[in-house]
Length: 226
Image 1: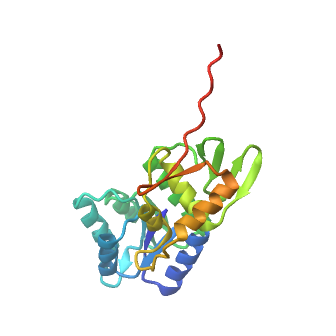
Image 2 (image 1 turned 120 degrees about the vertical axis):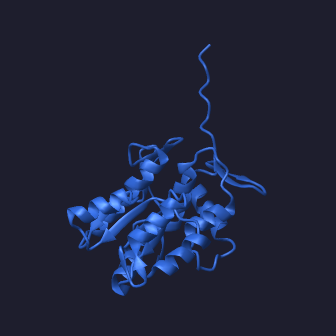
């Protein structure tokens, strides 16, 4: 999940960036309302973690501004303002979830995964396609009774494809999931990780459509009896 973190505390922002990356997210981090606006205008994100007390304004004002402009980006508010009235104001102001500080990183990651599930209309955390079961919480796969380990980037690409089975995802779309909005994109990263995924899942599991992108191969049709 491509994620924008808006947090002005340097140590916490760095900790969130490292911790959520290890949990399988692709985070970018900024420290102000102005930088958040610039990131949202320049990058494509799937969710945002938003502090409310920022040096140049209110995170809640930014959230309400986004909603007024028609943005449906899922937003998890992460703040020290954790009284009941604050939570009500945040949720009624457009937040999808609200978590007070201090917090556990595992809980934050689980709440973000829940936001993604709701956005995709899924009830369970596991993602399934063509014999493969993907567990985003553990960043593991299971196929034909065997457990499969993936690197962070392999998992990110595979999850992106499994979230939209049958859809063709352009190389640029997969790069957006792998890299931050200010990171330099390595030209052959996607190809390298697709090759590694095929080695683990089978050569035909991911199809290349020349000039268009990649998609998961359709499950084989069952032959009808008689």
